[in-house]
Image 1 (cartoon, one colour):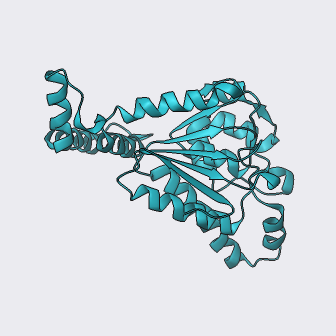
Image 2: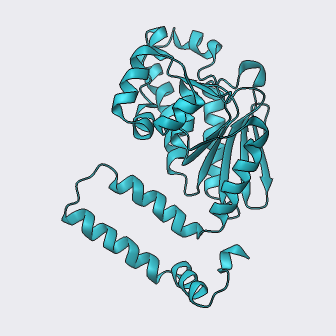
Amino acid sequence: MNDATIRVERKGKVATVTLNRPDRHNAFDDALIAGLTETLEGIGADPAVRVVVLTGAGKSFSAGADLGWMKRMAGYTFDQNMADARGLARLLSTLDRLPKPTIARVNGPAYGGGVGLVAACDLAIAQPEAAFSLTEVKLGLIPAVISPYVVAAIGPRAARRYTLTAQRFDAETALRLGLVHEVVAADALDDAVSKTVDTLLANGPQAMAAGKALIGTVANRPIDDAVIEDTARRIAECRASPEGREGVSAFLEKRKPAWMS
């Protein structure tokens, strides 16, 4: 999908999805949320795409909710607000569960829901000028829908601090907290993203999808008999799969696996 607010660029096996509202710091409304969800669902189903990069146009990653959208929400009924919130929840769930690795290219500030987009990506690379804030309490609101992803990224203790204070924190703090994985100079951002993309493309695509699903299943669960049996089944399925057999054969034969051709 390419429209005025979402731009998709395909280059080989990589899809770069750009929030394209630079004049509004890539803030989103219900229409952009629906469009981005549809875009990600399409990419998720496309076997030609192996890696997804999410970024923002201009100087910002995403300022979160659009002011015009917030004005409209102020007059919504409870049921309308529930439907609206479910739309954002579907977007974040789609991004979090996408069966491909996702990279947040954080080119500038990410506030409110923008933090949620970063947290829902598998990897995040930011430039030093990036800044982050969970701004909702300043408006008498809470970062509810994005909270599962934010807490998973930075932990409950840090999440309490930044949810309750709405303090802004810089890229180095985001790195220390685990919200981003790397901070590089602005002129090195694209190179850093490209290197990470190349690393991902060297790996089995089905194995990465299975690994992503694995982490979502075992995170924060006790290591009981059910988990032990489930993880044993998962590796057995991978070993018996065509991709698993090809990967092991390529390693033993000292050649590149088929997915790198």
